[in-house]
Every structure is written in structure tokens, then in C-alpha cells.
Image (cartoon, rainbow, N blue to C red; front, top):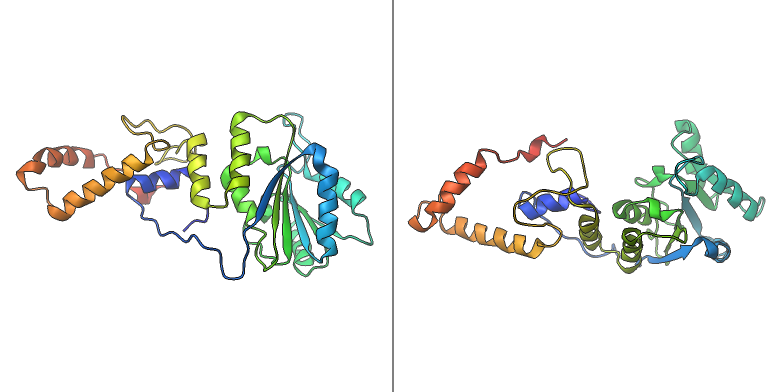
Length: 277
């Protein structure tokens, strides 16, 4: 079960080795999350919006891709971000929690509990809050340097809000210079909240990866099909194969002799999905 199919999972589905049950409705009482893209030059407007939401009694996540400043990567980091947030949202009017992977488990739990209880209005964190966090009162997810994240992770982080009855928002912060692929990822997130559509775009951008290995992106060297472009054709072919098997499960009829011969050869090297790590 997955809320956000990764490209490899989607590719396995196209092969017909996984069936899909689609849940395409929000739980009762929830509203779609409004997602917007903001550049660094819009930061003061974003801070103003945060203060408006806090004044309504709401809480806010701010997620960073890095804990500390990097000499190699030009992205916003949590430590500098935390200092900037505490200056713009000073005590005693505002309380800010901080959570990241280098903290001791007890300290992380303490900070998380403060946020869950509503003792802090802002949670500054890395992706440690990506799963398993449920705070219905949190209405805003701000993802800093969102160009650093893949589509599946952006969608997963966005899912931390929108868990209550109030309107929730996801703000994707980026630098001013974005690559073509990055811009497509951001535009996809702003346009859609459909995990299947997002996974298909992710498949187009990253490729399905190594189905039997650990690599989850990159090209899959099929002789004919391109899973990113030929999905409808692959589905038609799979349906045709199922129709033939329903008519003649053993492929014993003369008109299917050539298919049976090829299938016997293919099954000698058929992947065993159960052995995937």
C-alpha cells in the first residue's frame, strides 16, 4: 500500500505483476490542500501569511533539506533557518520547536510533543517529520529549497497538513534559477494533488530504475516499450494477454502455439518480485 507510488512501483504495475486499488477521495471533512510556489524574494509575504495563520490559532511546519550549511550545495539549511525564524517570530509571542536527525531521540520526542500539544506554533525540521506525524491543527507546510526534493517526497511532506477540517496550505520555496525538470516538478505539485498523476510525472522525469535492484531511478532498457510514454499501450497489451488466457489458460489452441513457445522461453528468466529488497 502506498500513498505515493515510486517509479519502480508504477513500472511493476505496468508489467501486470501488481494490481491497483484506487482510493481517489479525501477522508470525510477534509479539504484539498492549496499549494503555491514562492521565490526567495517573496519571503516577507510568506512570513506575513504565517503570522495570519498563527493568529487564527493554526500551527506551521517549515522543512529544510539540510541541517547545516554545505560548501557544495547552495540550499537553505535548518540551523540558519531556525535562527532567522526566531528573529522574525520572537518570544514570548511565538514559540518555535526544532527537530532533526542528529538530535537524541528523547530531545526529538520532547520537541515533537510540544508541537503536538500546541505549546509551539512553528516546527522547524528536516524530513524526519515526513511520515508518522499527525497534527490536525497544523495548516501550513513550508518546504524550503523545494527544488532539492523529488516529487514523491514533496507530496509526502505536503500530506503532513490538511488533516483537520480547516483549509491548509503548502508553500514551495525555491531560488530564482530553476532547471527545466525542477520547474516541471514544482508546476506539477502546484497543479495536482493526485498521487498517481504525480508518480507518472516522476516516472517521466526519473525513469523506473532497476526493478530487481536498489536503484529507484534511471532508464529501463526495454526492447520496445517506454513505460513513461507507452503506458496506455502496455495496459492494452496486458488486457489482451488476460483475454487470451481466459479463453485458453494452457495456450493449447493452434492459433496460440507461437505465443506458448515464446512464453516458455521468457518464463525461464522471469523476475521473482518476492526477492526484491
